[in-house]
Length: 391
Image (cartoon, rainbow, N blue to C red; front, side, top):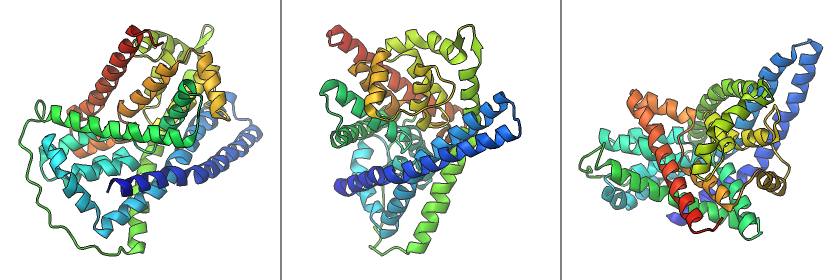
């Protein structure tokens, strides 16, 4: 079971690299044509910045990063679902989740979260018990979605380069796999804590008649995985990312004195960032990346370089040199990985939580609980490392 899920995970990450790069080149290449069109119409520079360098560039980033992994993961996952394999996964793990006060079906929603946490939250409808359904919704974010995998892989390579001077993708993949296992462990721990505090109750009995194995109908499989899941999530992400791109461009280009608004905000967050082993720019990048996790690294690079548009560097070595020049250590990279794994859900997921629970209270808690865990973990790790004199 673990090997099969690991293979799907590997296929998703490895298979998405090339199409993601092609899609990125296509969309960002089209940006030049849009810019030329704006110049022919004598569009004001600020309007061109908001529409093209802000909204369009942000949308291009989100689509090129999200679409290929989802287009691979969801058909594979739907194939296992139609094959009759996923109910057996849930049945096998029921005992482990029951000990945490949760439901065995939560493992299915957790697997969906690897593709997109918003889809994972929607999938929680399969859990009959309202209490256990809420448990699954509140903890689904501890499973990294495909929007966070690029950041986790990049930071893993930066961390390995800082510690052992080796940026091999294979070792970085192993490190990311370890991070995924940590996320599952945190899911079980937080489920256990919630089931004894906010969501007290006795785990329900998991009665499941295992279906026979059957070969899926490829046509209906593709329609469901592409139309009902991939495009549905992508449209929600695009809806949230477009206004975010405009806001980020404005914050980067409106100046107060010698600094942009981003520079001032990062300065105000510097003390808090240092406390948890990060810095003000990193904390701000996560906040501005709320609409889509894919934006965190581009925003961070833009902020460090004091540029007015989101950028991507040509290589890991160039990125590592930039980060070191801005005071990064191996501890910063490690805290970046942990904070990315554990922090608040993206805007699309929070909107989905609100829709599924019909409650502002649970939506706020869905953001506060993982953020509190992320801050606590990074704070404790940072203080221990500093007391030990390792940085």
